[in-house]
Image (cartoon, rainbow, N blue to C red; front, side, top):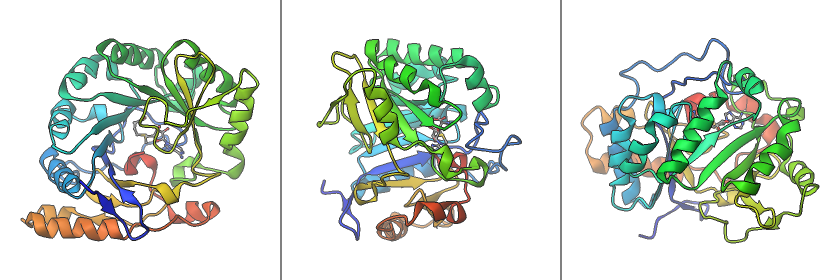
Length: 331
Ligand code: SAM
């Protein structure tokens, strides 16, 4: 399959599907304390609708799919969706982003259904701080989820850490050292100016080059040119000599990677979003629900694909352009 080449000569092969805007956490940088208004039951796409869009996207060259949210594990019957998505011919890589609170109970079934790897969001190694940033999350449950995933053979396990100045910057070295003994890929992600709730300010964002400098004081970082254990995405990957795991840096703020952006997002309510830093959306739901055929729906999807901008413009204007919180977009 040749894949889809957009108008800026990028190969678009990656679809991130948000299956719910509900979450069992209330991370301070992601949503307000009271939560955000949620889509009604009939507003979110059914699994059949998601599968229809996914199948059309795969026909157009998407071969990599990520399930996200909200928290994907809170949606009923998520395992059945995983099974169907993993069964789509042409999908070579199916993954999920989760906070892992429910992963202990789901890991075996997810693996059986075809999920081979996960990204787990964990912004502190200190149970109290974790509870604080997530407004109530239990870090022990995250570790139980990680252990369960390892036991059933889900690999690699990537741990996503949003580095926030004044909050978890003291833990950068501890996170990096997790990779010494365990085969995790710990990825530091710059705090992005997304969503009104994030209360983002430039001084909160720690550029990845600074994080890397600090980690290099522990031991040299060896670059992994081949993407280490694969699926590196936009992360620049390194490893400590002899370490079991890897360390990644994702720098959407200090060093955008628009020129190699290969992704599309499908929101839980059926909208295609071609750039994370833009509120432009293409709504597929009216067609999905009015009996449109695959040709018509595919055309709409193509229109969205081809409207993907070359780049997202200056980062300091993003807050003004991008009001949807990550929980609604699907991070
Ligand atoms: N509930 C799942 C989870 O916790 O991984 C999936 C959805 S969550 C919105 C996806 C990711 O977005 C998380 O890793 C979260 O840390 C990240 N995220 C949310 N707001 C962000 C921001 N302003 N900057 C960087 N990452 C952000």
